[in-house]
Length: 484
Image (cartoon, rainbow, N blue to C red; front, side, top):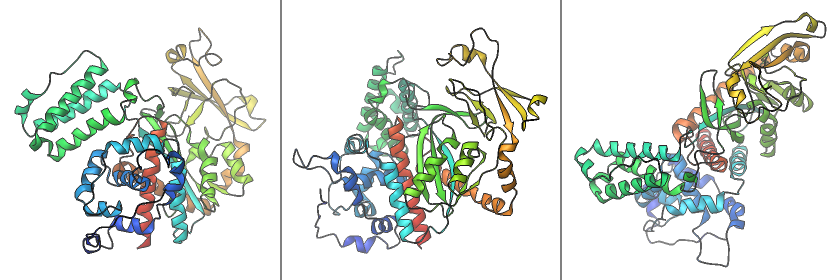
C-alpha cells in the first residue's frame, strides 16, 4: 500500500501561512511516518473492496487528537479549517475531511492487534539517538495511574452523568430550552437511557445556535462518543480489565497503571500498561530489557523504594548495572512461606495488598529473640479486614474459615542487603537519586496536557493504544524542544 500523491493548485499556500517553527510542521519534517504502513499492512486487504483511507492519515488524526486532547468529532471538525492540520494530514487545502466514525473503525479494525506501544516508543528513541539527544546511560523508572473511563460506575450511571453535564451547559446559555428536552427516564434500564441520550442529542443538534457554543459542543461530542465509540462496552457493568490500585493507605483508584522508563533527558524509552493493582517493582526487568531493545545503553536504574526488592537487586548486580533505589524494610525482605495467594507491598501506603486488591488495615512490629542469631530482625505483621476475607473468591488456602483475624507476616533480613545499604550512602548514589523528580514531572504533563488522567476507552487494549499515542506525543515534543 502506497500513499497517494495529492496535487492541488493551492498547495503553495502552506508555505505562505504556516510558520517554519510551527509544531506540526516540525513534527511532519522530522518523522517519516511510513513505518505505519509496515506495521498495519497485514490488517488491510489489497484486492478487495473500495480503497481504504490512507492509514498514515488516519494515524495522524489520532495523533492530533492526543496532542490537543480533543474528541474524534472535534479533531475532524478542526481539520476542515485549520491549515496546519490539513498540512500535517497531507491534505490538499480544498480536500474534504473524513467521517469521524472512520476513526473508531480504524482503532478497532487496524490498531487493536498491533504492537503500537513498543513501536511508537522505539521510533522516538531512534530519532532521539540519531539527533544525539540522548547522552546519559541512566533510566528513571516509575508508574502513573489512569482512572478507568467508567470508574466503577455502570454504563447507565456514566450516561446519566454526561447527559447532565450537557443539559447544564445548555441551561447556562438558555434555560428556556428545558421545555424542548425529552422526558428523563429513571427505570434502571440501560437501553432506555441510551435512547433518552440519543433524543437529547437530536434536540440540541437541531438548534444550530446553541449547539455551536464551545461548551455545549464539547459536552455533546463526548456524549455522542460514549454512545457510538463504546457501544459494545456499554453492555458491561464496568470496565472488566480495570482493577483497584492504591496510591496511599487512605486513597485508591479504579483503573490502570503505566510503568515507564525515561532517560535523564526526559525521553521515555519503555512502558508497560497493567491493571491498577500491579506492583511497580515487578516491571523493572521488562522496562530495562525494552529500553535496551530500543537502542539504549543502560548503566544506572533510578527509582523509588518500590524497586528495591531482593530480586531486583540481584538482577541488577548480575547484569553489571547500578540500582539507585533506597531500601525499604518492607520491600527488601525475603519470605520463605508458601501461599496460594500473593501479597505485594505498596510503598506509598506502607501496607501490603492481597491478590484481590484488598489492602491491609493495620500492622504491628515484633522482634523475637529466635531470629537474632540467623541475621533476621524485626517481624512485621499486616492485618486485613476479615469481613472481606470471608467472602473473597480466593480465600481457599489463604483464609481459614472461622478465623477472627487474617494477617501476613514478613521478616526483615538485614544481612541480605548490607552491600546495598552501604552503596546507598555513597555520594554517587545520592547525586544520581536527585534525577528521579524528572519522571514525576513527565507523569504530570501526560495527565494534565494530554488527558492521561482518565482512560479514553474501556479495556486494557484501549489503554495501551492511549498510552502509545500519549507517549509518542510527549516524546516528539521533548525532541523538538531539545532540537532548537
